[in-house]
Image (tube, rainbow, N blue to C red):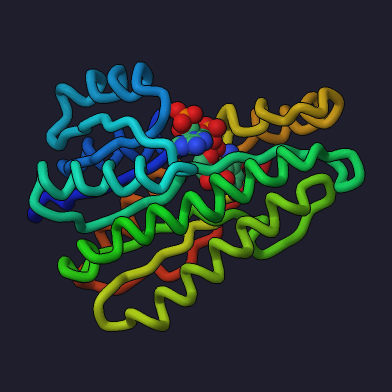
Length: 240
Ligand code: NJP
């Protein structure tokens, strides 16, 4: 095992973020696990007790820039720097454009775009020092636009554009990966307030990829260091 990497994951209390934290700690890395649900983060850290790496929980609301910068500062004070950031916190409210409450659009922009920007802003100084790695969690929705999720698709297009701008601006100092998953079996769709759409979409997510498969892809990207850079990776559910 090479030197453990110091990895900041937002949205680590559930789904893909949680699976990534366990996978990366299982491979011996040090994971700074951030989210609002500290109870879930503490049980995640307890699950990692027997793993070769470690998971440290830290409360963080990505819609609050002060909370995000405090989280990054606490990590770099504790571990002396940061090698990888995974701005994974993200939400989706599915609704036809004419029916969606404006608050749901704003909430998606606040978490999926402004939250990612705040996370990158807080992480970049340390990442550039370490010649580190940004792993943005995009989506198939970064490449394709689906009905009932126009604003969600717009947020993931923004994430992809941010990845590309980081890649071109910091070509020699940063590795940048955008991971675009299709449906993953997490609580993601349960947030949708349109009862009919939530019920219609749930089976697609039930039959989607397991979050551990996404975490395998993240581990592959993280451990490519020194051999090459996975710049964009799209993964879709298997044949059924
Ligand atoms: O969702 P879920 P996923 N501040 O609901 C956190 C993308 N994706 O794992 O704060 C900080 O299980 C929340 O934590 P908490 C998707 O767009 C998914 O599926 O405690 N954190 C929780 O840990 C997103 O970018 C699918 O509530 C906040 C996490 O976000 C990423 O994958 C397909 C927060 C959400 O966990 C993870 O989603 C795809 C805040 N203000 C892309 N608000 C899919 N599942 O099918 C929320 O293409 N969080």
